[in-house]
Image 1: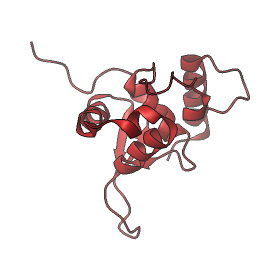
Image 2: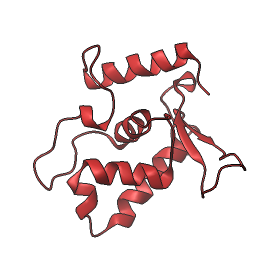
Image 3: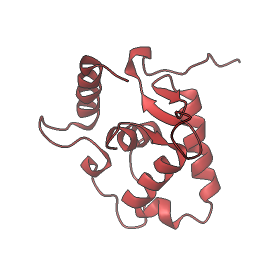
Image 4: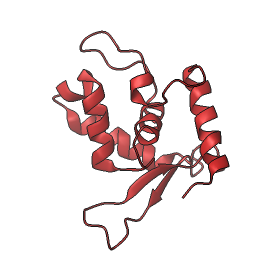
Length: 131
């Protein structure tokens, strides 16, 4: 679990990323609504971070991340090619240093691991691209 200071750093980082004033909630609801039927005008890593951060336990399974985006934005609900945006979510989770995969405790029922935000590793990619 994250310490209080690490959690405060995440809050400061996400507020700066969104331009949120102190005291305003930090999560997907803090984002402006896109025009009806249009894709949200935010990078996918930002949407994932806010979905995770806005959850009560600051961690979500992959399915819960999908659900949070579908619940918040019409564009994700209406996609007929849902496999493409879901592939992009998985790609970003595995690529970015800021996303930490945490095994589900064996005492907890359910499928899949949890994803958390960990800004101590930076914002870049986990591995260097080969060219």
